[in-house]
Length: 394
Image (cartoon, rainbow, N blue to C red; front, side):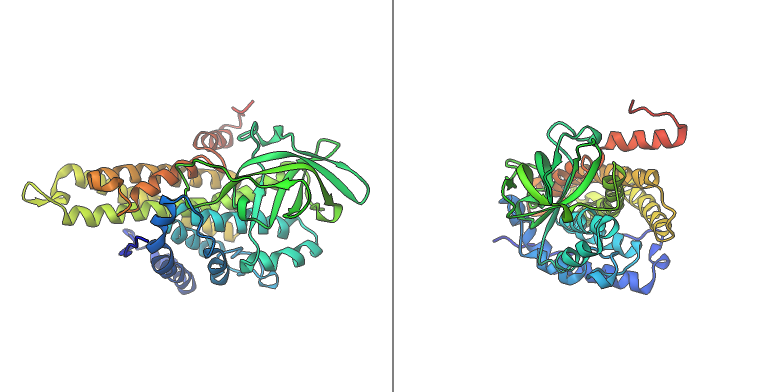
């Protein structure tokens, strides 16, 4: 199995570390060291084979990467949102798929159980999810309803002490390995509600999505419900409508805003180091104007994004961040990361397409990150709606 030594050095052009607490810096260093030791040496091999490194689930649990903002009484980390963001930044610096695994578990599975679930549900599921004993997934997107989740057709009907669930979800991270799924479906009144579906329930299957060129080291699948009997005790009692799933997505999008920035940092750092070492026309290519232009623009965009996500983290900690503010940061980080990955690949030339470096893998991964949990264009329109008050979706 091919291994790679990780020489990453984090860019901090505006001395933003001075804005972080000692605890936040310690959290970041812990995850950074883990990624250097456990993820970077193996991830190219898993991505080439399109295989999920399932052994990391327990490791991520032990590190506290699952539900870091969930209270400690349920097994979470009880941390602030900047610490959570830094964790996601470091995980995605390693690989977007690794960060996706943690994002889904914490923001899309544990958060709704904590925020919308019953106390019985919290005590039953959260500790096992936090430790990595169980992996969860989040079922919202359907074959015919992606950007328009309100159109979902997955539904359930009352059958006494249980309900009968029918429908399908697709593009579901973690699905093939998940013990539970947080599923959003319409009740008989047409209202959207969340319910917890457990592996082993008859009629519930999770076929793997084949042939991906992106997020190859992440497990993606479908959720198929064929007359699945779900106990009524598994329905979230405290939320109805799109408010439920969208509240989860805000938490996940916040993590992505930090995470995609990590991928951008990795691509920039590799390109910078390469530009100093690669000699053409008798001098390092970093001395040529066009390469310096690329590198200068990369560090400028990274610095701007660092300021954006840090301020957003402060607002999250204060309970003042809006969904529209989160949309702006998610969209910005994904866009700059995708552009930086492409420019970094150009600096490395043909070498940049090989697994010797992580750039091409990041570039392919970011094509998913820029699309999932609100596409690039949809987040643009969310900002447009917020500043004009005029709805372009209808």
